[in-house]
Amino acid sequence: MANAIEIKYMGAEQFSDSMALMQFAFQYEYSADTLEKLREHFMSEPAVYYASFVDQKFAAQAIVLDLQTYIGGKAFPMGGVAGVATWPEYRRQGLVSKMLVLALKEMKEKGQLISMLSPFAFGFYRKFGWEIYTEHKAYTIKTELLPARIAYEGHMERFSGNYSLLSDIYEAYASKYNGSLKRTELWWNNRISRKKPGQIALYHDKSGEPMGYVIYEVKNKRLTVHEFIYLNEETRAALWSFIAQHDSMINEVTITVPSDDKLPYLLSNPRIQQEVIPYFMARIVDAEAFIGRYDFEIAASNDDIPIEITDEHAPWNNGYYLLEIAQTGMAALRRLDEKQRIDGAIKVDIGTFTSLLLGYLRPMQLSQLGRIEGDIASIKRLHDRIPERITYLPDFF
Image 1 (cartoon, rainbow, N blue to C red):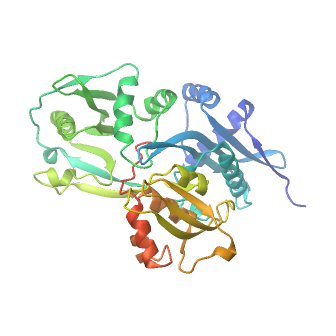
Image 2 (tube, rainbow, N blue to C red; image 1 turned 180 degrees about the vertical axis):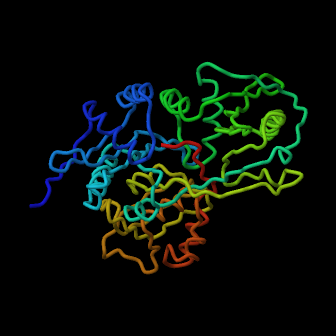
Image 3 (spheres, rainbow, N blue to C red; image 1 turned 180 degrees about the horizontal axis):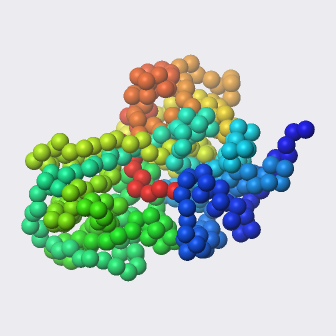
C-alpha cells in the first residue's frame, strides 16, 4: 500500500519537530536559549512554513520567507526559500518536489515575482527552474599584505544601539546591485544581530555625514569581516585603513566582497588568497508580471523580440511571447498563439532567463555557451537592452 502523503502549513505546534529536523539535516545544535529566541522568530517572521507528512508523521519541511530584493534599483517582491530538509527515511519520495511546486503556485498568487535560495546542490534546484545568479569573492589577507594605513578627513566611531542609521547606508549601497535584499527592521534585529556578531565601526566624512560601516569580530588572531558597506571611494579607503589598525593583534583578515571588487589592484602586493564562490540561485516566478516591473535600457527605438520560455514547474510561464520593449525601457511580455509564431525566436528556459535579466551572464555569453538559442540579431538586440549590473547578496537565509 502506498504511503499517505500530505502537505500542511506548519504552526507553533510543529516548531519542535522543525527544529529537530533542521539541527539534524544541517548538522548543528542550538542551545536552549537560542531555541527560545528562534521560537519567537518563528512566530514573528513573515513566512509560509510547509511540512510534508507521511502516514501522519513529520517527514520534510520547506520555508518561504516574504522578502524584497533590489533589481535595477527597484524593490521586487521575493519568496526566499529556506530550511528545506527531509528525514533520511523519507527521502526520494518526491516530498520536496511537491512542496516546491506548491510554493511556486502560492508565490505567484501572493505577487512574489522572483524566488531565491541557497542550494545544497545546484543540479537539484536547476530541475525546478532555479539558476545561479550571484557569486562573491572571498579574500584571506595576511597582515603584512593589508592596504596601507592612510590619513582620512572624516572620523571612525564605534557604534552600538539600533540599526536605523546603518540601514540607510546599507539600502543606498545594496540598491546598486541586483539581487541584494531590501532589509526590514525585523531582518536587522533578528538576522543581522544573530548572524553577524561583533564590533561595528561607522565612518563619518568631514561634514559629519555617515558614509559607511564595517561589522567585524576578532578571534584567535583573525579578523573576520561580516559586512563592509561604503558609499564612495574615500569611505572604502578609510574602512580598510581602520581594519589595518588592528595589525598588532591579528595574523590575517577574511572578508567576502562582490564579484566586481578590485582590492588586489590597489594593493602594493596583490598576491593575496582569492576564491570565487558560487552563492545563491534565483528563478522568476511570474514572467509577465516580472517584465512589467523590470526596467530595460533606454534606446532610440522600440524593440519587439519574439521569445519562447520553457518552465516545467510553473506552467503559467511556459509559452511563446513577444517581448515588447519601449524606447523608455518599459516593457511587456505579450503571449502569442501558435498562428503568430515568428521564425528565429529566442528559446530560453526560465532559469537562464532569470540569470540574464539579473545580469549574472549576458545574452551573447549565454548564446556562446549554448544556453539560449535563436536568431543572433534578436539575441544581440536583447543584449543591448539589458542593463549591465553586478549581482550581489551580502545576506544568507
